[in-house]
Image 1 (cartoon, rainbow, N blue to C red):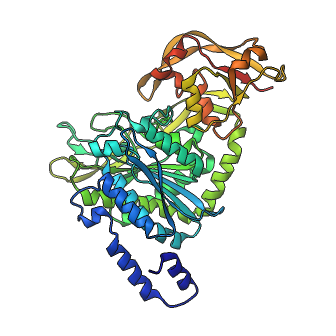
Image 2 (image 1 turned 90 degrees about the vertical axis):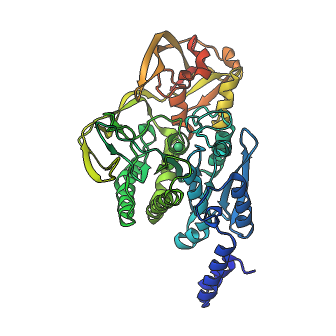
Image 3 (image 1 turned 180 degrees about the vertical axis):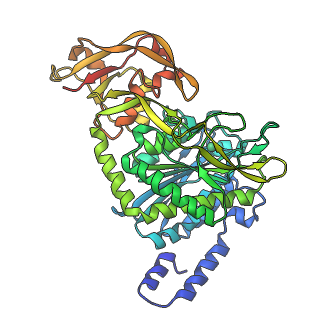
Length: 501
Ligand SMILES: [Zn+2]
């Protein structure tokens, strides 16, 4: 059998094999249609069918590798499909889908992309993909949002307690993608008897909201180029589209562009890692098996539109992300508290009457389109963390954060250690939720180097700087200390701050 790459070479050499090529694509498509296509969109692809199809499609292509990244909590394979032959100049794009097991069109869109990878390479040249089509196979097979340990994977990207996320983060760290796309589904905002209009845009695209991770290029490109251009493409395709927003007009809630927290995939994996990062949210059905085909087609339409805009700007994205990653270890300050505020715009959207389906345009003033910083800290030289804190040391390891053992005899006098003096508890608000916070201050503490022998030193000057500071500053609204797993830190904060000279 003639392989695809050989065929491309022949065509590039100017040998007129167009017909044969067409024949080849046709036979390949006939041989290996995606399971959902084979089943005429009557049922979703099971984990087992997916694995079988991935084995077949990767075995028949010299450019696609199937990688088993690990096992889920209940022992199912976690897999990715990755292009072979990575070149230094390739724009690396990582896709993750199906973190939530009850959002099946996300996984189907990822399988579609895997099928298209040879075509993307042929069309766009310097591009390289890593696709993780099913992050949560246990949840998927159970039909639940959460994983086999009943945890929400898309709220675990900071703590990284779940095996599925540990595998995905390890893959991310190894691959270092320039672009991350996380695919989901969302439920319609159902109208009420007072307000019988439903918000059910077919596709939404979310960009990064956490101010620390909005590199100037990343943000201006995402909001100024990607969103408007994707909007135009989706309009041409006749699919309703908007920027991803949460909050309900029917319930008179504020509308905002999703969370600023870093425990989700878009931010806690992609954006904190320096990638240009997005979340795709397609409309789900009222039941799992409603509108299978239109849900899949909607997701494919948005994923392909997003890729088209990003790949048209391949070189700019490549350079900007590399530059951002070089500069990140030098950052001076990190924002530890921020919130959404009403800006100058109104939220404009089309809604549909819940009974008659009639569309109507709405404009809504309670639109928190802006995000402003509330508190910043100067980035210290690093932090000292107790070697005995197993949970924290595992956390560092799972995030690939570098640490250095503090040894007796290390030259003293260059570090100024500060210890957190706890003054009391307060509650701070994170997007309407109450989270634990501290009052207190860092005070100078005489700690000799000898006393630090049982500590690890975590320097901030590494490409995890923002994650380190957001997670380890005790007052941070993103801090580890607000999670129950780290509640024991609340009596006495165990981390010492090492000031810059
Ligand atoms: Zn989801």
